[in-house]
Image 1 (cartoon, rainbow over the protein chains, first blue to last red):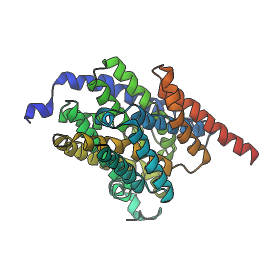
Image 2 (cartoon, each protein chain N blue to C red; image 1 turned 180 degrees about the vertical axis):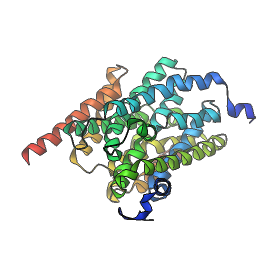
Image 3 (cartoon, chains in turn cyan, green; image 1 turned 90 degrees about the vertical axis):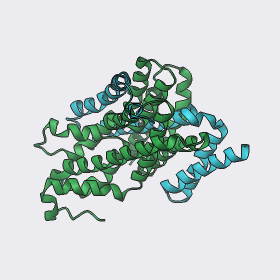
Image 4 (cartoon, rainbow over the protein chains, first blue to last red; image 1 turned 30 degrees about the vertical axis):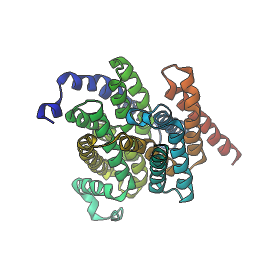
Length: 116
Length: 246
């Protein structure tokens, strides 16, 4: 791997800012600008937090339902099964993130190995 | 490591508060989760022919795992800049309520808006979760410095992870690559579920996941926004109904 490969070209970096940094950062700055007058315990904030949680849940679902990159090589049933198995163990272990993640991963790897 | 009590002289210096924030990254499993997630992002960037500098710049300036994965995946699969920008901005909408809910925890009556810009940039799901856990233990006038320390620590961990993942990618098989990508939804799902203390949070999380595939069928390009607003509003309705009955 050469040094210039690690740096890449300036065009790709410009695309990063136009397609990635600006569309992402704009929501943070809007929050800074318009969030000022809102009280911590207000009803509006309860709604806004619920919507934020649900949008994040949508991103989680999207990655599993319409998988990117190498994850697309894993059959649907294994991806859903991995999340389901992880969730069951997460709940059984009094909400251990670690146990849930490890179970989900093992389920997928074992399934891949079993299917060949 | 326990944070010093609220009235401790340890909190008198903002630099000390910054250092306590920095050290707090060792107090949460989410640091490991972030490391693993950003390992995956580094590997994904390599596999989609982005440079290491590009991957590191995306972590520094975007600083949102889902947005970075969406950006790399869409650009890598030949989407236009506009299409990628729309997908990223939709995934980033959730940052707005996060910033709105986290900044009041740091603000004092004399805080100026510009003092909050860097903390605003650092706000992403992990910081949002950790702020709600740590900030009640930090004196209000030192919270911005503490968050700067916590955020800088987390960003540094992720930059290291990107670099390691980028160089590992050449040696990873497709199955191991898939395993690294699967870490993202698993870790985000369980860390959000762990923080769901109220019924409304659980409803928002569950419905948000279940409604997304339905919303995606509408093919509006705003799937996540539609399912998020609907699921979040229903969750708020549940919260309101319980309040009224109580």
